[in-house]
Image 1 (cartoon, rainbow, N blue to C red):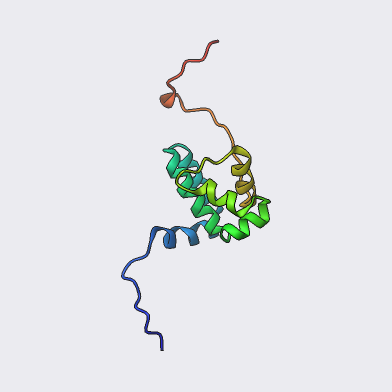
Image 2 (spheres, rainbow, N blue to C red; image 1 turned 90 degrees about the horizontal axis):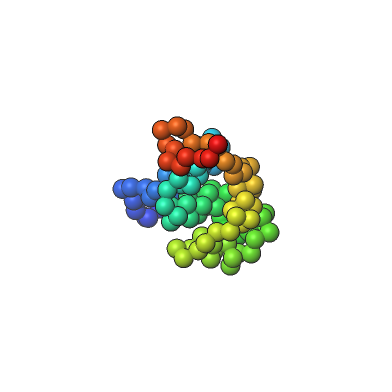
Length: 112
């Protein structure tokens, strides 16, 4: 008999991780949205991505990143390097890209 009480709610991680595991399009949009926001949001999203990909140990093994380095990178004070970010994204079959801003989003005028 299970006497453990069920929580009357689920955490954001309990909600998002199963979606990230099942929907690669959503995973890509989730990361792209974070890239447009504050740096701490990207680290939170990367932690969710790592959890969806099997956790820190599994991602460290698959990417060649050390577990301590991965933990530091994803910590509140972490500062992910491009190469580490690219390894994590490649592990979940994604890559970074650059796209032009739509006209209404442009604030920089490029020299012609």
